[in-house]
Image (cartoon, rainbow, N blue to C red; front, side, top):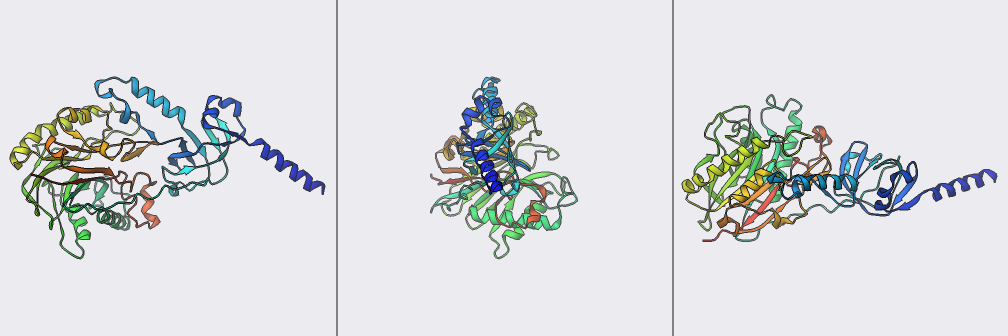
Amino acid sequence: MRKLLIIVSFLALTAQAVEQVSLAKLQEDWSRYHNQMVEITDELVVCGSFYDSLVLAPERLFCPEERAVGLADGDSTAYFRIEEENKAKSIVVHCRNAYYKVRTGDKIRRLRARVTSERHLLTGKTLGTRHQPKDRLAGPKKGELRIVGANVENYFADLGGYATKRTTPAQQAVKTQKVVKAMKKMKADIYALCEMQVGNKAPEMLLKALNKRKEKYGYVTMPQGDKDRIGGCIIYNKERVRTYEKPMSAYRDSASHYYGRMFAVGFEDKKSGERLIVSVNHFKSKRPGRNQYDTNERRMQNADSLLAMLPKAKEVFGDEDVLLLGDYNCYTQEQPIQTIVRAGYQELLPMGGEKDYSYSFKSEVGYLDRCFGSPSMAGQVVKVRPWHVNCDWYYSHGAYKMKDKSAHRYADHDPIIVDVKLVH
């Protein structure tokens, strides 16, 4: 009986020791709650998942380069303010969750944990997360063309080549299956793809899987032979559109690293006879852990080369309707993006919502994948949106060993889906 009373008393004391507190109150004075069990009354959102820890905040955290107006002109005031705000709002919870099962965007209610230090909490339990509904995708409406810009993340045909030594044939097969499944779900007429590698081998490998039952799709890319180089390609539905004229690169020198990464193709809608120019572009990447100024000069060179090519492309293809897609490796307020906008190409991503994104890095989200339209093209765009099929899902190189053959996490970027209705 005495032992029972001791146990009951201990449980009662433990229950009393858990103090309910709002996140704002906890953040006001971390030292007060140090080494104490708390229950946070706010609903929290998972912003990042890292092995034995989750980064939580009241809402998704946008990277400063996405929101800091004036950054393109060298004003860093808003950048540092947003950086500090993100740091102040977020907390790290060390827990036992299987990190690959937690998605960013998941929500947690009534979090109980021990405060170990400023913005760090500890719990020996697995946290119950509430998944957001999967992002469903409707097809295009009658009379509309659907065009997709997507980074397919190291879709490499040559496993002995650049950055592919860790990839096994089995993983490559699952990668192809996932990419094909995603493409079929998107139901696009034109796919502008980045990070395809080794000349024509990668597009042909992907087409073989796409055209398994019917020769429906074709592709176009800049001729590069079998050079071991990351490039891009445009895959299109031959039943709906046709190409005309030869593709045009933003770089004259075929030896340039960007010759096959930045180019434009003219398309004609077989039903209406209307035409448009689709340009796929993959700008220089940032180095991990660096801010927008790292390699910014190279990305500005990419932007300048693209803008110099476009007037020539309009003349060669005989059309003013230009749609720019791809992975620009720049967030909205960075200099290369604002340079393109100031040149007269309208940023169409706001049509998808100001609180949207296509990429997640270090617990912050933003748009690295872009959609611009020339003045005549912008008015013909009906809808633009990212499809959250990738970046909310955890990924590691060995993820394909989990035999996940769904469309989810076929790459690290979300595709940008554009529906257009071409008019005279």
